[in-house]
Image (tube, rainbow, N blue to C red; front, side, top):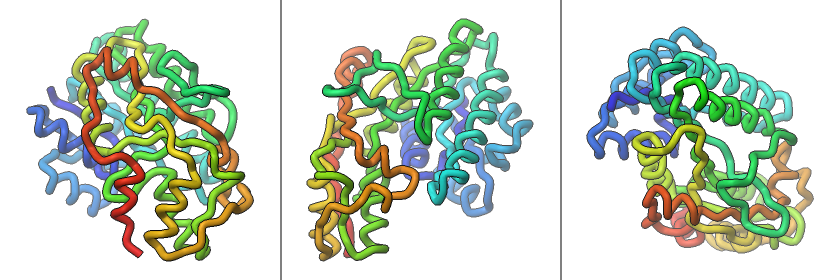
Length: 293
C-alpha cells in the first residue's frame, strides 16, 4: 500500500514509518523543513514538502496514496492561544485530507487521546470529550470518523497521555522537562491520578493494523499500561535526575495543568481482541529508567 503520512518524523511518526516499511508498504512523508525531509529519506520514505497549512500539498499527498495516516500537530503548549492555534490548524488539515478521500473507500487513520471516564478505565466505546483546551481535536476526529458514511474507511487510534521511547515522550516527558527546568520532579494534586501509557513501537504496530483492517468509523485504544500513578512516574524522574519529588500547583504546568491533574486510566482490551494487537515493548516505569541526569 502507498501510504501518505503527516508527522512522520516525530517520536511516534518515525516508529510508524519504520513499521510500515518493515511490513512492505511504501511511505511518502510530509516534511516542512530540510531537517525533517532528511530524516524521512534516511528512514526510507519518499518526501512531499509542505506543512499542515499547505492544503493543496495535503490534497496531492492524499490523492496519490492508497491510504493516509495523520499524526502531525504543532505541539506548542506554551500558551492557551498557541494551543488553540494548533488545534484549529490541525482541524483544517484533517478536514482537507478527509474530503480528498471521500468516495474512494481508502483508509484514513487519525489520532486522538484516550477519553476520561469518571471512576473507571475508559474504553473504545466512550465518546471523546469536546470541551477543555484540546476539545477541538476531538471534534475534528469525530468529523473524520463520520466520513465512514461517505466512502472513507476512517478510523482513530486513541493514544494514552504518554507515548514513550527510551524515557522520552508524552506527559511523562513533559514532567521530565519541567523537572529539569524547575529543579523539582513535581506532580499536581496528591499524585494518585493515573495516566495510561504505551511504547511508541507498540503504538506503531496498532497504526499499521488500523490502516490495514480497521472497519470504517472505528476507534481503538493503544494502551499498554492502563494507569500509572503520577507520583510513581515523578518518583522515577526525580531519582534519575537527582531531584526532590514534591506536589506542585497544577498552574505550574500551564494550559495542560487541568488535564495533568485528572485521573484518566484507559483500557485497550477490545483493541487487543479485535485487531490482534499485543504490546511487547517495555512498560513506562521501566522505560523511564533510560532518563539521563
